[in-house]
Structures are given as C-alpha cells and as structure tokens.
Length: 202
Image (spheres, rainbow, N blue to C red):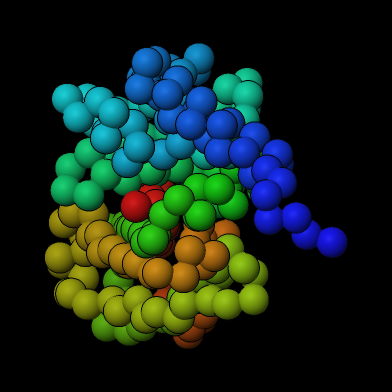
C-alpha cells in the first residue's frame, strides 16, 4: 500500500547527495590535478575558462580520484578530451572499460586522424591499395583507398609524402580505432607507414 503523506527517504537522500556534490564543486572546483580531476575536459573548461590546452587529469566516473586518468585537453573551439595511443600501436593507456563508458556518456561526438606516410625511393607508377580500419566495436570497419601518384623523380627527391584519414562520428562506440589492414597489388613496392593520432571526445 502506498501512503501519499509518507516521505520517500530514498529519494530525499539521493537529492541531498546530489546537492552536496554540487556544493563541493563550487566550493572546491576541479583543477585538473590528480587530487581534483574533472569529469571531462569540457567540465574542466567550464570551471576554469582561463586554462590553456595541455595535459590534465579527469575522472569520468567521479568515484575515487585514485583512478583518474591523464588526458590531453584541447580547449580550442569546442573543448575536447583526447586520449593518445601508445606509439605506434593502437593501444590507449589510461581509461579502463568503466572510465571509457563514462567518457562516452559525457560526450556527443568522437574524432580521430590517421596519417599515411609514403617513403621516397619508390620506382613504381601510379597505383592504389585499399585499407580497412577496424572500429572499437570490432564488428564494424571503415574502408578507404590509398592512391600513389607522382613520377619516380619526385619520389627519389627525398621528400616524404603524407596524406590523412579523418574519422568523425556521433556513434561513440566506433572510436578509438583498433587496427588496420592494407590490401592491394603485390607489385607495388612502395615503403609506407601510418601514424595513429589521438582519439578525441567532445
């Protein structure tokens, strides 16, 4: 039986806890240190609008600051929380599964860049290869094309040629990218490589 005049003690306690947490943030706002991390870089910027871009601690699940993670905060345009990969791999140090879930819950957009580098010295003519990028879900992927242009003289000049792949999505589960595979003709002897950029949430 429900009694309308009986106070809901659980609801009251939840509201009091929420008000207490909000009051603590105004009295002692986050400053991006290990002891006082914000939930995201956007939250840090809202409390500290004069902060410059750089490395700061965040704690997306707002539990104990012991599991706070160090991220790159990009405050240009819309503030972004960026996680750098382990160079040159697709591993991302810092957030565990829970923290990553909370980063996604506090974001609406994700982006990541990968740069393709062509080394000089190739004597092949124009050609192309397909490249597949594995999404974080490991069930989805992006497909792109690498195109090779230029004469052998241009490639022998010693200049390094680069081009980039830009990924942006509102489906936050797609990033960070986890792997890539290159397909194509075996007669292309061009030496190439990839640089994995940070994954950013905004």
